[in-house]
Image (cartoon, rainbow, N blue to C red; front, side, top):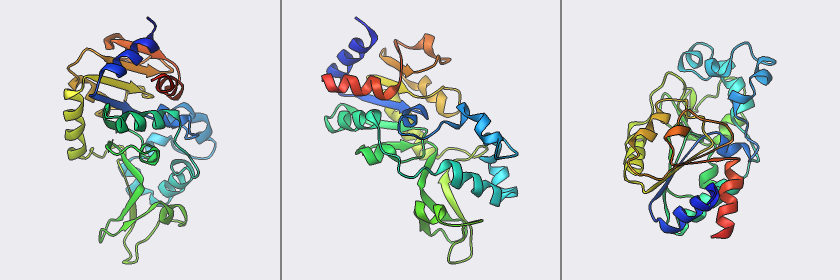
Amino acid sequence: MDGREQLKEWIDESSNIVFFGGAGVSTESGIPDFRSTDGLYHQQYDYPPETILSHSFYVKKTEEFYRFYRNKMIVTGAKPNKAHLALAKLESEGKLKAVITQNIDGLHQAAGSREVLELHGSVHRNYCTRCGKLYGLDTIAESTGVPKCSCGGTIKPDVVLYEEGLDQDTLRKSVDYISHADVLIVGGTSLTVYPAAGLIDYYRGHKLVLINKDVTPLDRRADLVIGGKIGEVLGGIMEEI
C-alpha cells in the first residue's frame, strides 16, 4: 500500500483528525513563502524578512515595517486551494476536529473551515494600540506611512511578530486538540519555527502523517511521510472518498 492509499484508509476510519499546517499550504494559492524567496527581498529591502517582521524593528522603524508589510504580507485576490477545501470538507463530514495553522491569510476560513486556530494571528484583524478599536484588512492596505486610528493611535496588525509570544489560549487549545487526536496530519511546514513546531511533541497517537515537498527534521518520527504538494495530495484523496 502506498502512502496516499494508507492516508486515505486512515481518514476513512477516523472521526478525530487534526491538521497542522504552515506556509506551504498557501503557496498553491499564490501566497509566497518568504523563506524560499530571499533574493527577491534583498533587491528591495536593506534587511532580511525575519528582521523586518520583528517586534524591535516594528518599534524602531515603524514606517519601513509597514512598507514591507503592505507589499509582501497582504496578498489581495488569493483564493483557497485544494488543500483548504479538502480540510473544510473533512470538518463538515465530522472527521476533522480542528485546523491549526501558522498562516495569517485567513484562507482556511474562506474555504469554510470553522475551527481554525491561528498560531500567528491574522492579517484580517488589526487594532489600535491606544484605544483598542478594531480595523479590517483594507484599512492597512489602503493606508500610507504608519496607519493611524481616529484617536491618533497606531493601528497594528494582530499578527505575532518575531520576539513576541504566541497567544496562550490559542496555544492551549492547540495542545489539547493534538494530544487527543487519532490522526495528526502535518503539511506545508518546515517544522523549524518554534514554539509552533514543538506542538508535534504533544501527539500521543501512532498515525502521524507528514506531507511536504521537502524533507523535515521530524520525518523519521512520522508514521507516514508523503512527498508532494499538500493541495495535490489532500485534494486527490478527497476526490476518492
